[in-house]
Image (cartoon, rainbow, N blue to C red; front, side):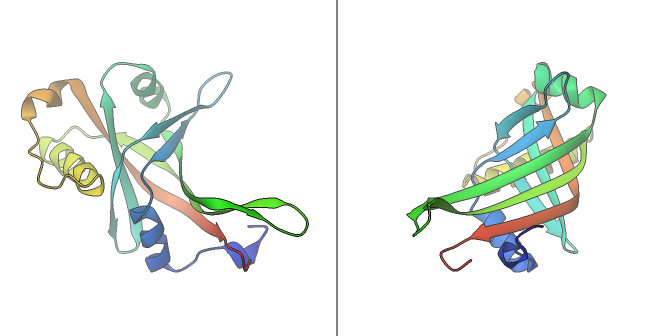
Length: 156
């Protein structure tokens, strides 16, 4: 990371950042351009390892691309505000970028678990998952292999 003073290293600060992020973007390999899409998500952290979950239809570009190449980039950010400095206008923010392999869940218990984590993160923990939608829904799991997080505040 070029600006080391902006790096967020503490896992608790990274968890706070993820908790306060509403949407993540998934970068998927495509030709000739990368394919990036925003998704609602859930996550869990086990032994400081971050796993993201998201869902989508079983048919469509996302499903097609992930069936052929499972390596993805995950990005999340929080825009705080713009700030005028003596030299320029800059943005105050917090963000993270991670890399991992995306797996389509097949086991119904894992699918329900992933959907529940998504609902929890979106503020709908008490919503009942209707199993009739499961045949048309893919639930994806991304175990993050590498993650960096950073912030820009007035001080750095």
